[in-house]
Picture 1 (cartoon, rainbow, N blue to C red):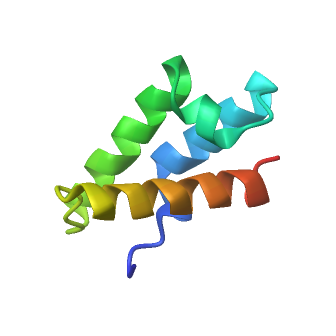
Picture 2: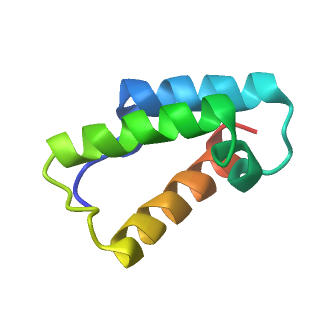
Length: 75
């Protein structure tokens, strides 16, 4: 992926919300409420950067990258 999503404002907000949530699992956090909202915003920004996430496998790959980054950078 050529776009560095970890520098995007939506990812930074997602990271802050994840830290504040106390949720041990990034995957669970993304599945509910505020996490889902910020992830949706991040995917919209990705589309704006030219990433095509319309294929479910591409979206799953992107989601896994976000999960890995949340757990690595925001725990």
